[in-house]
Image (tube, rainbow, N blue to C red; front, top):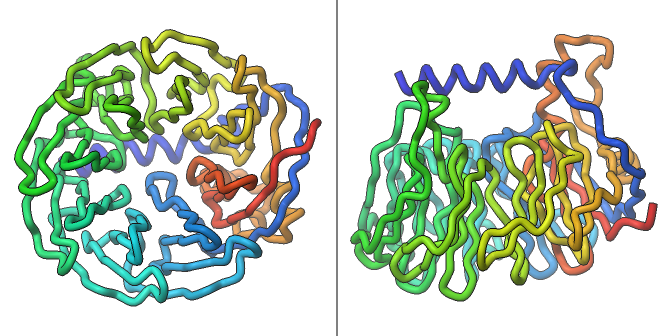
Length: 403
């Protein structure tokens, strides 16, 4: 029955992606960008529900895609250092630590691989899909599965050390939050709105705090998943839920320091004393991390499906579901401009199958339009920005010039 509800939600998302429902870009200056390189890395696009974000490590980039390929690219020019082909689509990762990579696939298999060559070190099967990047400590690999489990695997061989579980509601967002390792604790959010800390050594529950309470009569109204990106600084954890609250809690005990109503499925970003959030209505917020007070709110992007805000120099960047990249002032949220996908892909000299669809064929456009948006929030690397789109295009761009 739960599977039927999830499929129903997918159908609603697909229907919402038709061209007539896409909101035009708000009035803003066009921003030219310097495209350093670009390439198409997945021929048939990527899912908006997966969190296989590119990971930058010094002078290379690691990618795990839906074709089952794991790639290591040179950051300088996008050329291939090595590639390994596996049997199943990746659904979580990659995560880097020391000289290894951890990732998980659609068959509920967790793998540890060599960062230098991509060679498999070990493989372990868990109870369900892992839809978020694994996390690694010195001795343990932690994964969060789609059936409500946190599982600790021995880093040396992949054997299960412990398992912790919470019940899963009938209807949830497609995905899980990314667990976080802080000292000897694993911090994780669950789909009923609760945040937990367990011991990384044995999975024993240390504390549990309710961030959001389900409300309403329908299963849709009662969804309160802690599915977005969390942030941690100086003993305080910042979390946000879907149709619930954003909150600051202590890492030691889970005590809530402050909380306010807000709904987001992408999570938040922390920069100094500021928190930045894109909510489900398309509003971008800047808040004081110590109190949760609003410092500014940008409403120009209302109605758009936005990525998590990213801090790039003195600006805030968000991408939308129709592949536009927006530049906002970090100081006051003013909309400074936007960069269009077609300009970036043209400068990069790349395209993908969705660019070849007949623009006059409403059926084809409606079927594939969701593949044109951002697959993840942009990744900042030194002075450059790595951006990936759902249609499989990856590009490295320098800071935007003035409009």
